Length: 331
Image (cartoon, rainbow, N blue to C red):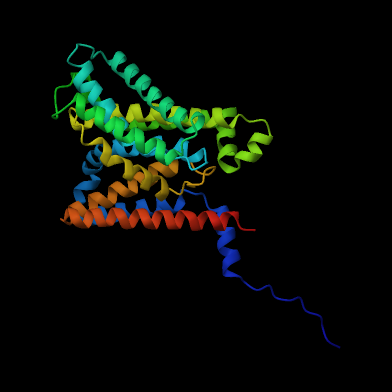
């Protein structure tokens, strides 16, 4: 008499990867890579554990903030992307150092308020071009990239380094951690609160499926417009911190951050199609990118190698990001 047996299920590698992609948080790969780079950095320079990490955090803070700033528009979907974040932060920095300070308008509250308002205005301009004029995001923000870079160069022809004393707080350390960490935590905390609102939920819904969101009664245009405004505000804060890190302003520095911010978002596992991700991934991606740069500098690699590394990392991040998305969406 034969005993019936249950068929043994076959292990399918594709199904296993799909399940893994759906269950593992989007920011885990970038976070693990950051840990690896930290270990490599410590192996190359033991001073990193004592005081080196504080200096690295200070110098990385503008990139971390600009990666955060890139996140809302990417999450909004529809090809959302802001190529102007670098020049916009540079323009904010130039306005602080070349307009506000020389005209005795350097009181802390006024400078902070001005940078936030200028950032919001920049975001509103980009949002108008994308959501109301209906220009594709990459074209609209490339145009404003050129406008902001040109304005910054026109306002400030040569670098300047005179700043009010209170701005040194951003690069100082009043406790066990650098002060700029509290800026990063503050921005992250405000974003966390925003994601708990109806707008935060609508942003993810629009990014995931704008047609379904529209059918459900969500104002897709307003959601995406506000995403650009939020991006602009974060960019303004990044410009303020950039000014403090530079110890002044340089019109040529801002544009160098744009590609790095885009790469950081992709590295952080945020879906470039929209609807998946957050500031944790953006921060991890930016940290990874800066640590790679720092490690290559420690090993005395040439600037050519550094640029090639940036390009390879960007390509790898976009390819991996797309593959991860396809695995998540597969059924």
